[in-house]
Each structure stands twice: as C-alpha cells, then as structure tokens.
Length: 280
Ligand SMILES: Cc1cc2nc3c(=O)[nH]c(=O)nc-3n(C[C@H](O)[C@H](O)[C@H](O)COP(=O)(O)OP(=O)(O)OC[C@H]3O[C@@H](n4cnc5c(N)ncnc54)[C@H](O)[C@@H]3O)c2cc1C
Image (cartoon, rainbow, N blue to C red; front, side, top):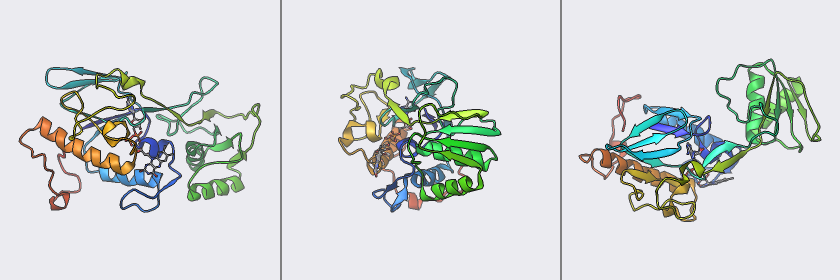
C-alpha cells in the first residue's frame, strides 16, 4: 500500500487547519482535539507496511494495462487500484510575500538553526516555535494580531518559553516589523488546490466525484472516499469519510483479488501480531 500526501505530514484538514480545535462527533474520541484524533489514527496505522510519500502531489492517472499509473513530480507509481481521498484538494501552504522563507511546518530536512523567526498566528506557527525552542533554537515569534492558536497545553508551553526568554513573542506587530534570524518561517495557513486531479476523467459533478455504492468511480478500480465523494452530499464529516474509506478499501481488495470476499468480517476475530507481515 502506498499513500501520496501533498503536505509534509498526514492528517488532512484536521492537522493542517484545526489541530487545536475540539471535535465532538468522532466516534470513541469524545471532545478530543483534532490533532489528538490524527495522533490516534497514526497509531492505528503503525502495524501496516505503508510506502508513505509525503510532500508529493498526485498529478496524473493513466491506464497501464494491469491497472493504473499515478504520477507525481517525483515518480510514477503502478497501482492495481486507486483510492482518491483528496478532500478539498491538496493543502498547499500560502506562499510568502518574500521568496526563500519556509512556508510549512514540519519542515523536511530541517537543520536545527541557532536562531529562528517564526511569523504567523496559525497552529503551525505555535507548533514550529515550540518544537524549535525544544530543540534549543532561540525563537522570535511574531504575528500581526495578539493571538496565537494552539491547544491549552501548547499555549502553556509557549508562555513558559516566553517567560524563560527562549521564545521572544511580538504581537501585535506592524507590517514593517523585522527580526534578525538564521532561518525564517512565514506560516500563514493553507489553500486547498484541486487542480492536480481535476483533469482526471472521473465524470466530475462540480468539485465532487460521483461513485457507486461501493465507492467506485466511473473508472474501474478507482475509488473515492471522504469530502471529495459526491455520495456524502453535504455531509463533509470525519465519520462519513471513515465509513466510505472502509467500503472503498474492501471493494478495492476484492477488485484486486476476486477470491477475497467483499464482506469484510469483524476485525475482532483477527489474531494479528503487533507488526503483521502483510496487511492488505
Ligand atoms: C475548521 C473545520 C472544522 C471541522 N470540524 C469538523 C468536526 O467537528 N467534525 C467532523 O466530522 N468534521 C469536521 N470538519 C470536516 C472534516 O475535517 C472533513 O470532513 C475531513 O477532513 C475530510 O477528510 P478527507 O480525508 O476527505 O479530506 P482532507 O481532510 O481534506 O484530506 C485530504 C488530504 O489529501 C491531500 N491531497 C489532496 N489532493 C492531493 C493530491 N493531488 N496529491 C497528494 N495529496 C493530496 C491533502 O493535502 C489532504 O491532506 C471540519 C473541517 C474544518 C475545515
């Protein structure tokens, strides 16, 4: 199994847009922060062998005789079946007005700098300032409003670093504010971009992809789940995406290996080692 994700981490809208907000309607995670829901989902992925391609945007889908080839700027991947869970689109960081600044956190291949200037009030700005400070970096954190977003725990840690002087907080600041630092982050949220997949011949209904009851699109072996699926209508909900993903995964497995039953059975009947050799 392989996952292509445009951002440098998994978690979709929950990680990118509202990790600091509580969600009340995710089954079995009462009033958890969205970031905690993502952490729990990542723990659930641990036993699976997944080729995770972070920071890669899926741009092309072509038939290849046996199935499909999904292409990104970095590589082309053969796939017997494809599940499209692109939500609102690739969550790409808003560009900075000055070129050369880091615009996303986490930052792949980061060399921990001695000093850093983090600009922004989004959750990633608070997280970047904290994680840099925890790594020993002297941090300047600035925002045009006197408001930083984060979980209560993150905001408490931010206040502790502010008091110790390791994070210097400047907010609100005027547009001309500058700080000297070895590395600078300009974190200003995300813009969803559906354009990389809009050209795929999926019989689009506006920004939605229609599917049959199994989640299969107009293309055999290509499935759609979550916010992008027309099947959910206006129900853009995490729980709806979970249900659609379960159906797509089981039908995709059957599509690839017709001897597998579509009826998934109960996972409570499984006897799995902690890290099974193979999980479909
Ligand atoms: C502020 C806010 C609050 C919300 N609160 C709730 C709530 O309380 N309860 C609830 O149930 N729902 C809530 N939602 C809705 C919920 O977040 C969505 O229903 C859910 O995230 C949809 O999941 P998804 O996997 O379909 O899409 P997404 O979460 O959008 O994930 C899609 C992922 O695919 C990636 N991607 C897209 N295109 C490509 C590409 N071409 N190549 C590579 N990667 C790509 C994106 O970068 C993204 O990470 C909220 C949404 C918002 C914005």
